Image (cartoon, rainbow, N blue to C red; front, side, top):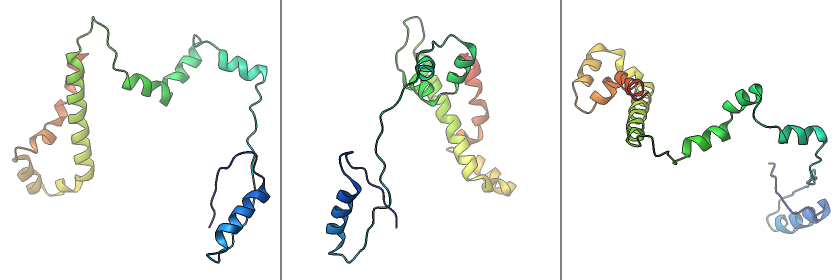
Length: 146
């Protein structure tokens, strides 16, 4: 079994081994410190500082930022809206995306349900299943909002 622990940089491998020996001798286990890595300070070269301080005006960098998970997540959870926008459209967006997620989740998980046409016909007759059957028009609400 291998385990990793994080200890302060002031601890040496012999200190860690001593603690392990005191913990494992009662349980008749044997533990050995195989390696110990120390945290090193970052060395910032002029090239690294130039890249970090570069403005986002260059086209390749802006394209690269478009695929950034951190930047997109910050925009996704941002709740600030301008006064000239219709905030009620956000409710429509939420309902539409929830509807699409419902349909995709149900149809991906229960796709074998439609192997028999008789079962599919019976399922579409149920009232609560109509949201899944008619989900093809859920994307149209995004066209309407746009």
